[in-house]
Amino acid sequence: MKTSGLLRAACVAALTVTCGLGLVACSGGSDADASGADINDVSGGVAATVNGTELGEKAITAYIDKFRSSNGLTEDSDWAQWMVDNGLDATAVREEVIDYYVSQELIRQAAEENGVAVDDAQVDEQISTMRGYYSSDEEWNNALQAVGVTEDQYRDMIKLNLTEAGLKDKVATASEPTEEELLQYAQMYASAYDGAKKSSHILFASDDQATAQEVLDKINAGELDFAEAATQYSTDEGSKADGGNVGWDKLTSFVEEYQTALDGLEKDQVSGLVTTNYGIHIIKCTDVFTAPEEVTSIDQVPTEFADSIRQSVETASKSQAYSDWYKEYKEGAEIVINEMPADATYNVDTTGLTPTSSSDVAVPGVPGSDSSEEASAEGDASAEDEAAGEEGAAEDAAADEASADQGAEDSSQIPETNPDASRQ
Image 1 (cartoon, helix red, strand yellow):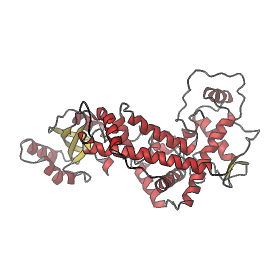
Image 2 (tube, rainbow, N blue to C red):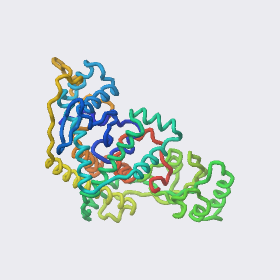
Image 3 (cartoon, helix red, strand yellow):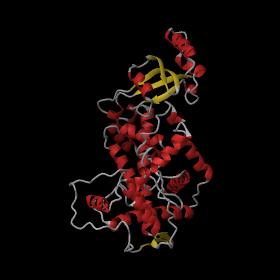
Image 4 (spheres, rainbow, N blue to C red):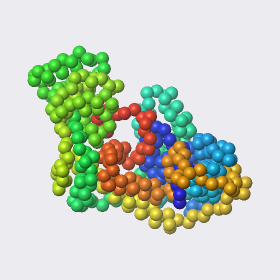
């Protein structure tokens, strides 16, 4: 089916960083979607049944109405043109949204069958992590409003995403990568890793510049070993025990000031005092990777890169296994989709309209349609793109690792992390 952008419109902005564990960028909740409608409310008719569970028509209409409102398509003429531009009609739109809810219901049913459950503590942890990206309750609430959900609805979304993540762990197993596969990936990744810099840092409180300068002077004079100084003085609990090691910049997202300072260092050089939102840093470049002209062994790339490559291969394998499982599970389900109501508000006349261009017309949000298997396939495609050695492949793989399978689509509003945040 031609993708339309319809199924992910509700999860734009920073909150999408926690979505992506599941079927679409941001699945709806256990009972209510971001539209606020209860999918189990059948007072307005039954849109579909999934193994006997009825899905209400009201939620389908509410989802489409919210999409139209969010994307400036409230006028029927604009909505009609959008459908034509995207190769859709009202029936196809409805089927996409129904499939979105069907996929959620199948996940819940499959999770119950496989003994997968998510408790409130897990959801609380996710919420706490997400809130940590915002400096105040006001910013957090503004982010929720920008997405168009309440915190309760957002909790429901996270619960479903965690449920699917647990189900994926239960039913899908990654195959062990072969040495040939690892070498193939290493050959593809090597150029993306070229020039990567590994660093350690000593972090001081922002009001402790005197101590930072004193330590820096002793390091430069050869009176104090950098790693020992990190262990003794650094306030970064995540790296101090390892001599301040925060890893490679190709595998970690550093704040701009830190990265800029690191870019100016050669191997074994130490920076001056570098101030960021996290405090005052002294940075040491501990290694620089230069890609060999020909990679003939996985041992030619640093261990951390090899581990990232291995994880990328395993992630792609597990995603494929889950996609295959879900496809079979869905094929075995009894799914009945009823006819579209004759008075559906989104069923507008498109007679005589032609596409405004030969290519798809982009609408805020990203494509989504055939639920879990397509979303999983998108994940597979992403992994395949990485394997194809596209520009930035190494960074993409690192982001996948750091987000623990959370396919963040737009984290532009999320503050960049502490240099060692990906390890915490």
